[in-house]
Length: 340
Ligand SMILES: Nc1ncnc2c1ncn2[C@@H]1O[C@H](COP(=O)(O)OP(=O)(O)OP(=O)(O)O)[C@@H](O)[C@H]1O
Ligand SMILES: [Mg+2]
Image 1 (cartoon, rainbow, N blue to C red):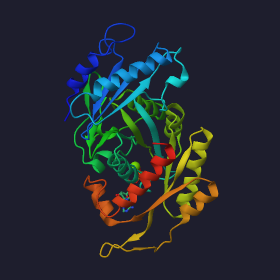
Image 2: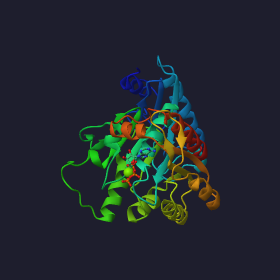
Image 3: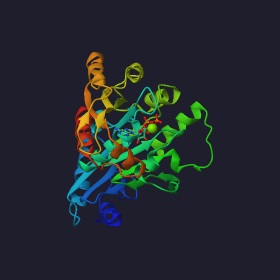
Image 4: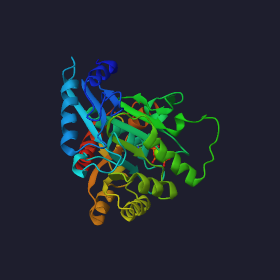
């Protein structure tokens, strides 16, 4: 494994066009080293002309890739101040260091949004992407259980540190509070806390941050969508008519705030026999697919009701069991529609 200190030392040898080194000037930050030998970092190109920014990026790439063990480098350019040509900025979300933000939402509670979010996040990480998951459900956080995370989030240099589990960086309100104490948040407070968790936690460099939204289309969801402007939203629904009416509401809400709906996932679609693995349809399925067609949004796939998935979810084992392949296919579809 490559040491972050070695990356820092290599970066300290790169001159900042404005004087000093890019480490002493603070241009290079958010170094992340992945087990596969990928090194990611954020390079602030404020105040530089496009050509200078490109030269600097190339110099950083050379310096990092010369380190033993480095297989790939991923450099994300950021520019906060004005005066930097727009085309020097990479395609990325509104949050520096995070390329894509994907919100997972549903109109109704209990349709399996958190289960789907966790499994998609793990599947995306297995596809080689740097993935984070924010459990934005302050009233019923479930990521600690789903990922098997115990204890509170650490603070380092005054920044919240997500926990790393199953290859995903995870942050949840459940890691912020005493599980025995009830939380009473007012709407506006809750939404600003969540926006802060996205913008100010130490996510490092991420290809994608999956945000598991609380159920419904209320204030928290709306504020999140408006303030964070996710690159897309995935809507989870069950085949039942009532849930689909709620899914329609969720699609409409994202439409109102100009967030692209990446597609609909039908969860608890059919029943997976625990004995033989065959999927049958006691309550019918395919409602979400038909509905997606009617609303003109892509259909991303279906996940059957599977007792093994429920057990793995309760035991903190995302990405395991028979449905792992199903989630991998959905994750590929999501990655493709959002341009990852
Ligand atoms: N496909 C599935 N097969 C079996 N159990 C499932 C499936 N999807 C979800 N579950 C189970 O259903 C319950 C609710 O799922 P989950 O917590 O993911 O829903 P949610 O939409 O996030 O709920 P909330 O609205 O409370 O946030 C959990 O016990 C979960 O393990
Ligand atoms: Mg949930």
